[in-house]
Image (cartoon, rainbow, N blue to C red; front, side, top):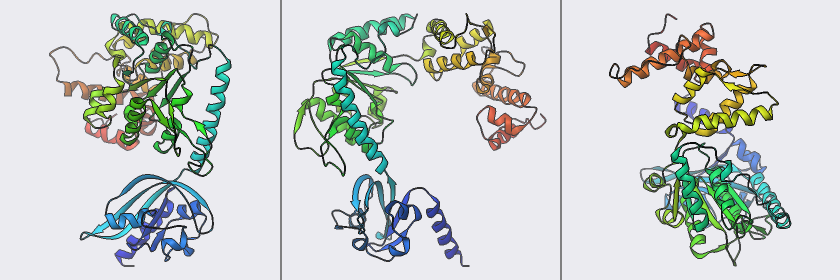
Length: 471
């Protein structure tokens, strides 16, 4: 078989094995490839589609309505477009599709789309918005049920840094302006925001939070602004979160993960204090306070283009920075004591303590996952106690033992001031981690690699690089 035919067969097999729909047309709109997932999505047979023009397969195909015909004319891709349409057999399809031109010698020779089925997402959205409305109505009857769990008394700290932050947060709560909170993942941004809400004059009003990074962009707009009946097929009249928050607080978590296009719409809402539902024609006043957060320095997000500068200035009337746990070591002891008390009650244990060696390790660890990581480690260790009352390094997950322990089972003591370069320190630390993992698993490379979260091939490569073949 000629090489070109082999390549065609490989690509045909590849595109038929992926779980996203793929359709390819020539510049005039004639379908030249239609993969198995697209056939499943649209409930059509490939042999009834390939070779036909788009208007023979789909209803109401025009240059304006067809991404393929439009891209063939403009030579520009269309990315992540949300679309509901019908096939010529009456099948309704809701997708998010990206459409690209194939250009050769400045001419479009083909156009292809990669399509994701979001029909179930759309149905879930409708049900979610209806449920939010019901919860909102019920909440009006239940005084004091504002959707929060935390107050300033819930925040555990001992450091002067956190004391200063709490004082600033209390002032910001009473000032009632927009607030931007930023801090690394796991530092407790929502806990602080809930405390601010409960310290403000809006404490008896709803608190509504949404993680902007956790919801597909195609659904986020509808969730925030609400939908008008008929905005898309099956859509019902439903309130968005701006309305559900009423005169309370709307918390936009990880704002920098929201698309720039949607940020522009958020900016309009906060400037005009009016919101228009998706598919609607009328506007409704907005009365809630907006608090937002980013997991990186907001100026970094502005500079790299992930956060609009005008939206930043609008929402960052007051800014609060939660420092990482590694920068406030004084809080670790207080947090350890708090989490020990919490989980010994949850699991019905007696008094549990942290061993002296482990406490020393905790105080010197960098805590990349911050307070959340510390909490999860303590909870995990308490599940491994097996009747004992002191948590030691032995009760930690394997991946943490590799971080915490050296070859002989003691804490890392490689670096002596002025005696080593950073490269040497890192090399020795890596070698000790690998050596400990291999020793714990009797030299079994596969199990050792799994215990420290890397692939077998990666471990073999690193052993060779570090000259550890003679384990």
